[in-house]
Length: 136
Image (cartoon, rainbow, N blue to C red; front, side):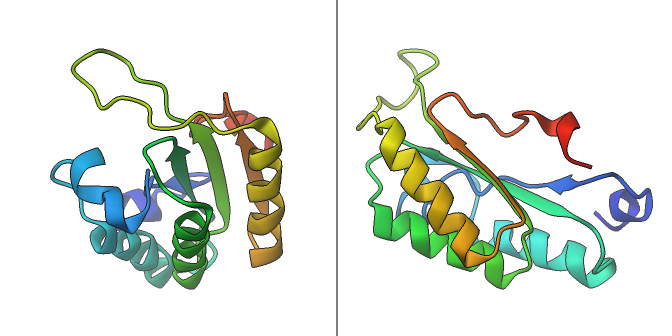
């Protein structure tokens, strides 16, 4: 990670993907705290490095859990966030538990902005790389 940070990318991205409670079933082998540590470490190496993370909704999380994840991301200095709808890529993947309404994405966007994220993209079709080239 240090080598990547020292190479000075425009933005360092590491996706949290989902809320703490759903990490096991959604991200086999990944750990919530480890993902937060990655983003925290990047800021420790270079406090000026812009960091970004992404959340996918639709796995059965609540809005309160999403807010908790956003608070945790801000606590480690995460600057930007994307929030999009999980869409099951194949029958081998977890089924969608809920399709979030566009107004719910608008609410999440406003919450993220109020928490201090400098840049927020939130919508059903938003992906981690959504309009990545637009914001240096």
